[in-house]
Image (cartoon, rainbow, N blue to C red; front, side, top):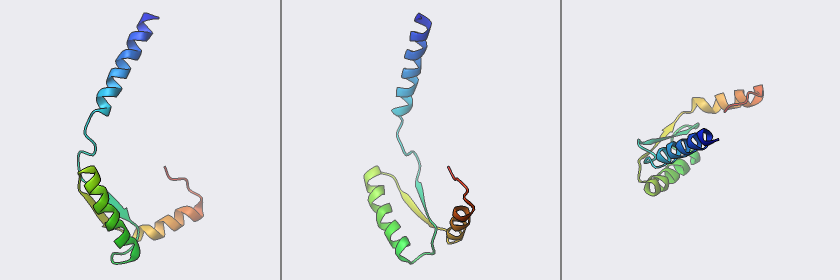
Length: 82
């Protein structure tokens, strides 16, 4: 019984120390599955600017037009993406 309590206390201490780390530690990549210059790109850049200011970290918008087609293929195939 005491061993379980000690193990639980140690696990709690480990979880609290992990939660205390600064996040995010490096720039955030926001992937936009459309070509640059469109409405999705402009909206993503506005969101990225505000998110970067709020988090205190740089947010990079990366346009990947090839991913739009991939998302359609995955949806039609019924593949569950985690």
